[in-house]
Length: 375
Image (cartoon, rainbow, N blue to C red; front, side, top):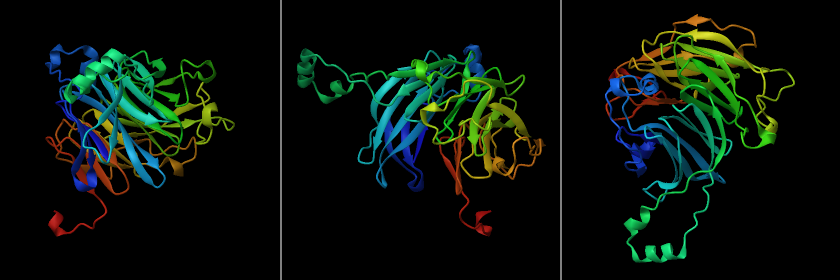
């Protein structure tokens, strides 16, 4: 399953294997078309000339019941600064909104990890939200009024606000966000070229779980437009200048920083975890707006030059301190023909899914043997 957002504000859950939409929330986010020159500076840094859509970030996580997936939680963020949390069930064609939150700027990142929803925005805030919406108290007079009104009027009752579990300031407009359940790391890319990491167990409100963000300069003179995590304690950053950098996070031997079972005691509180630049990948001529490490030993990148590139990247085969070929221009594949509106990519061992093709999603299948009819 995949969740997609449209330029006009729709949010939909799709079954990629069947090329079908399963559930939709129409006009979830407001359209706000502005000329590039009239947008605020931070928004121009993020969007440039090639993005004017209402939905700017989406996320999905499947909820498992035994051996089956019971339902999915879906979240979306928009140019209006609103974050929506939905429930998608297999027996319903509608996304049921469970709650919402508000940022003071365009939402730039959405992710689910460690039982919470996380979001970033151009307001420079990283926020952690509870997935359990607070109960809505309804006065008896309101209940009686709803009983006499039609269903459409009842449906317009606004959803509850999500409970905030933590908030951190990045000091700059945040442009990208990623998470990893196994490592328990939240990674953020910022407009000043810095990247930051934080423990996914952290809360800025609970003194027993306070954690600081560790920040470093990832791209001098540019922005961090995309960020991802890869096996081998790796962080990959995509720059507004088209350069991709690969970082390894090293920790003290006694640190549980990358123990998947470290639980609530896993925090990044100092510079015991330091990023080390191990590789630089060159080839894109536009801002790198999407990174995916879903296929072992591979990195897939998408950029505003309209290309997708597939790189060999496996940090698990290299020892800490050992350099991979530092500056590389040797992408295994370059998939051309997309528009400059390309905004997201997904990759696993069998396929690549991307947008940037004039209102359709593209799936590249690598499981079948190619023949002359495929050319």
